[in-house]
Image (cartoon, rainbow, N blue to C red; front, side, top):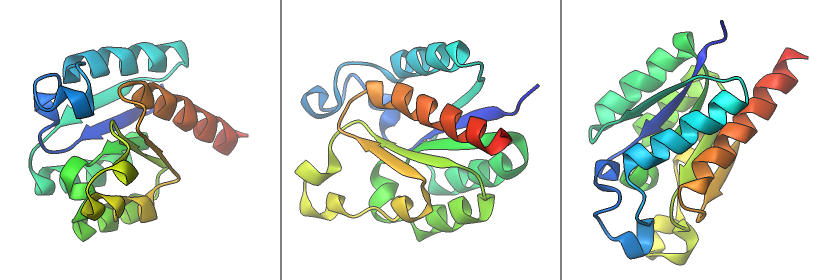
Length: 149
C-alpha cells in the first residue's frame, strides 16, 4: 500500500469556524479533514491529518513523514512567517510539499506576506478557503504520479 499523505496543521487551526470566520471561513477543522479525506480517497490516496499548536511537534511530524509519508501538505499558520526550524525540517524530509493557507496571506498584515515555508514547498495555495486543501491533494497526487513514471 502507498504511504499516506501527511496533512499537517499549525497553531490555532483547531479554532477554525469559531476564530475570525470573516477571514478563515466557517468550516471547522473536522470539515476540512472530511473534505480532504474524501478528495484523497477519490484519487487513491490516504491521509494522515494532524493539528498542533506546538512548533516542535510539527517538526517531529515532518521528520516522521520522511520515512512514513509520500508527501506533505502543510498549513503552518502563524509559524509560516517565523519558523526556520519548520523550513529546515521540510528541506530535510526530501518529500513533495504543498503549502496551504485558508486566507490570502498577501492581502493581510505586511508581516504575513513573507513565508519561510515556501522555500521548502513545491507550490503554494492560498486564499481559497477549505477548497485549498482539496487542490493541494490534487497537486500532490500529480506529483506522486509523475515521480512514479
